[in-house]
Length: 254
Ligand code: DGL
Image (cartoon, rainbow, N blue to C red; front, side, top):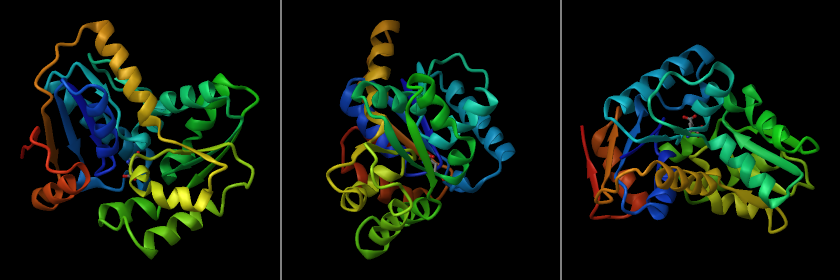
């Protein structure tokens, strides 16, 4: 079984990629909606939440933790990972691999305030490509929109456009460095135009998770998806079903 956590609905964008790549593997996803948004929290709060979430998944004996929260990855990049028996598949490393393999040199990173403050993306990317130029922009307005289900219409379109207007013009690619943002991808596409590639780190991450699963010989299951939240279970069920569709393999636990 593969374990995922995020502050909220963003984790579903990772879950979707992972389930598409490893459809026979069981997935458990915890959304910590009681504490969303993580991106506005202090470093010490984020360390505590990271430890609690890793412990929670460890207690369920997951084979691997496939990170579904960039803010937690950025926290770990600065503070270190809490102890866990499970291998951790990181989002920021995955994004850096995607940038390197595509040969991009001028990169925009749109992230939560907490992620951008660590500069973890800049460090990981320039660690692989020393000549890369990386610009990180914090976008605290976007996660609340996604959590409120505002994916369509003028409000999210304008919010994404305002964020993209703060990026330099001549970028090769922009990393959607918060797992909530792929749910706003069409607004990013409209704001950035065709000349700028958009990177969802979860695509390379799913490949890395598949490689680890094959290498370590993780037992396949039935492809079940178990979702749980620390927030409102009924609102969560409705939001998950809206994003993933009515999949027969989807169940909810309290
Ligand atoms: N989706 C998470 C991330 O990737 C956290 C967003 C938040 O709660 O601020 O950073």
